[in-house]
Image 1 (cartoon, rainbow, N blue to C red):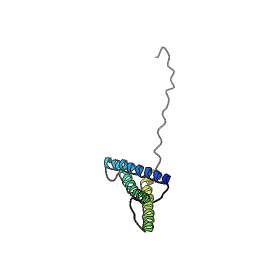
Image 2: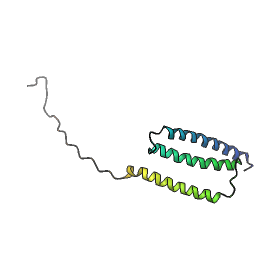
Image 3: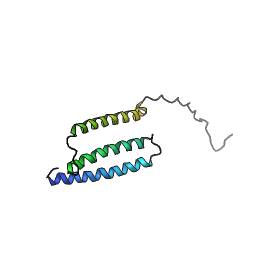
Image 4: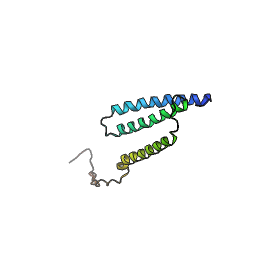
Length: 120
């Protein structure tokens, strides 16, 4: 825990913001149409990420103490970032993959007849 009031206030606002963001993403996950949808999967991943941030901020504020788990936390963070990279890569593969061009449309010939007041 730090004694600097500015850092404590900033960490407190960050804690509140992360908790509110967690509530929003929990709602998004619950409103997703299926568990295989991009919205659901991304919301669940962000909820896991937010849970880790809440634990980190709570330790910084002195609310909890995890002891010497810094190396384990770093390993979990690295693993989650690698999983996130794979997740985004797989989900966006279809977007970046080369798609065949659609067949060309047939040319439309314009009507070149002259039309006047008297049309035979």
